[in-house]
Image (cartoon, rainbow, N blue to C red; front, side):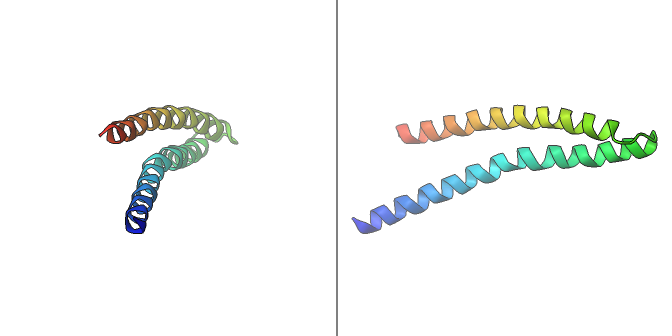
Length: 84
């Protein structure tokens, strides 16, 4: 009985970390790319921070849309596995 609880706990921990890693890249990569592209455009066109803020704002929207879509997919996978 105790062994079954331990295995179930490890499985839920592994699932939580997997979902976290799959979803966290939607926060890091778009914003990081936005910073790099925005800085490059600001230097190229000699602007203070116009492009940086604009591109980061756009990448934030991309990040939220991707995060929402991925969250719904992961939730559907979890629900499907729980029904089995």
